[in-house]
Length: 186
Image 1 (cartoon, one colour):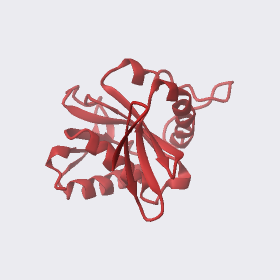
Image 2: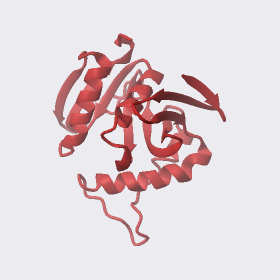
Image 3: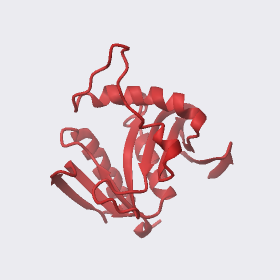
């Protein structure tokens, strides 16, 4: 079901026991995204050298603010049963090649309470469906749980038609899955 609201694109799907909604974020959602990004950074600090500052916040720069100034960058909130459960930021530009016909998953976060319940896979699927084109998804080599999640999710989404490589050069260090969402058999 697709619904329109407050100038936001929204997708809803009924899972076994939750409603998952993907809502395009607006500039007034920046404080929410900033707080979610702090939770994401906390989780991610397990894999990269990332420490809080004297204010007990992770220094995250303009990652969220760029969503409102860069037309190629798109932020979405995830809601489960109406409650905020995560976010995704995608960009219409390959991180690896700079190609603008390729979508890149810049950030992807589902709060721990909602993990392993199909929420992340549904969030990813709805995001891919919004941009039916070529995609790249990258994970840090040390984040094996994320790699497992993405491989399984993309395999289901594409029916096994994706490329899975491991890079180790100036562009990226870790697994990369690439696929074309226009090839998806619905």
